[in-house]
Length: 299
Length: 215
Image (cartoon, rainbow over all chains, first blue to last red; front, side):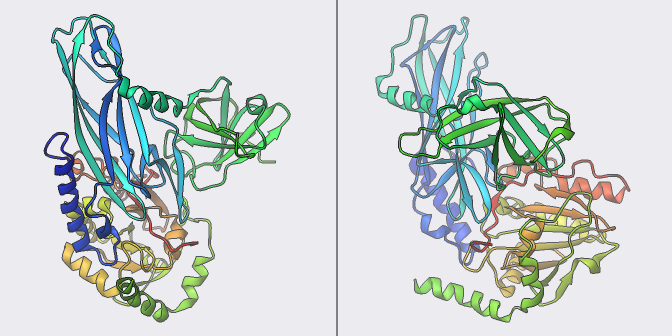
């Protein structure tokens, strides 16, 4: 379902209400009716600068405010769910870069695991205005759709619009957006400064990196969130084995995992078990397949 | 609160009527035992007409398992558009056994009594061979069903040949169906043509199965 009118929260709430009424009519014993009157997430499109500069990239944020108790999904939604998506509508010469996703949280309900965001998330993307773009303004349209889940799941969406001047000089900062972008960037995984490799057999995937990557972390707790939802059993425990120079994270391979993958991408989150001061570190990983399949050993 | 009690009453009544033996034994199998190109795990379940259904009785026939939840928007995508019903009609007419499975726990979204399951079938114009009631989640856990819809195809020889999504477009929008590749139809056509199923396992998309807590 796509909202008929742009940027119209009220309109969307009405549509959601209708949808939920339809659901409520067809469902006995469903909790969906309780959430009928409110949208479960509200979206906003925010630019980092007050104008766009030709031959430069400008950053945009799709900010979602999510009702307490509900969550929306990461690029890999996990066992079920649906990735949040943004479809851009831009003039021909202009395209938006891929969404830059903040580190996700893991949700687990009755042995089914999901990855996503609670309360608030900002999805970032860059828009580059080419030198030859003549118009004096640029209108960006973003059709955002998400699946909000708590006990039940309700899809939602909004069409967002933003218009800003285009010039040749450096754009003015949008002071109101500064903290939004700063916080969003704090939530981004940074490229892992250490090499990661993987090996896999029929049942397991083993991620390997230098033990030094965990230096200074008290009783490290490591979790891997793959970009591709088909690779691992999300609900299976991930076990960390430290051995000599290596740290090995053992994952259970999903039967849906395809053969012949050579790069395993995802986010590696390292947390100290000490709690309190320990701040979780999130690394974006692009693990290369390095060893023969039969070398996967589980002690 | 009173509403909740009233709503769950038929559920209790239903649980009391369940014959405990087989279901309880299945519930002990914590790890899903369904594997591609291996014998599909046998099960015994009660359908919405009170009939006992065993997978082992279907030998020689292709079997489709479809996990459902009538409140899930992704199920709504495929029933509201008529997509699921047309698959059911097309393939049951060709001798395929189609079991729709409800693993929602009593009190959870999508839980139905036998009468409600039959009412859903009629209202939707659905045409499964039977609707299997799995309120304990035993059958769901045996196959590792995670989402609704979650689809399984079992060959006439009893091998599990497909598990995963209904199609390749994870969305709740029925407009996407026309341009999607339907994995279940593809597997069934390949089986009928005596070919190997090419796409054997995908990640299902949809709502999580509303299993009983701790189940």
